[in-house]
Length: 179
Image 1 (cartoon, one colour):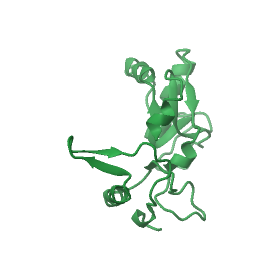
Image 2 (image 1 turned 120 degrees about the vertical axis):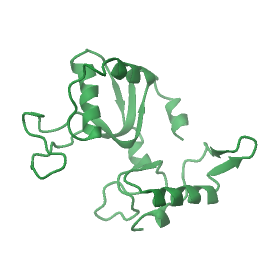
Image 3 (image 1 turned 180 degrees about the vertical axis):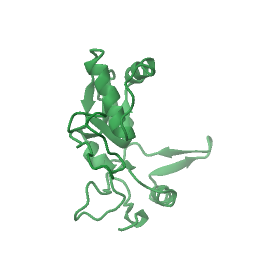
Image 4 (image 1 turned 45 degrees about the horizontal axis):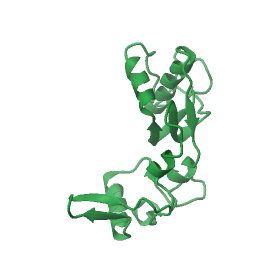
């Protein structure tokens, strides 16, 4: 799975995830993520990894933590704000970052549905993470993984262990709001 893929990457200044490389800045005042030109003058946000599927090498975590009090104020929305902070590391501090999204499109679902018509990035049988799920869907997804033997209980440790050699996962369609 993810750890197997990361072993093949260079482990410094590294960001992997489902990247948004050209997110438009909402300019309509009624939008929950509205930004005036004074708040953010560009028409697009800096690149950022979306949602819950993101990996940072520890050196980036340390760089961000060291700059915690000197980073510019956040823009609305945690994902675009994160992209702005990464941009500051490059533009203001002169750091370089490796931004990688290889394979992320097959591992991330933006919408918790298996329908494909008119849906951006639905659940697939290769999905690792699903954005915008509720507790009921999450419990169903875990129960499905256990039933299909993706996870097994280690009776000595009392913990669940994943089958790391598996690249295709059980269908989670029955767990989504609209299969």
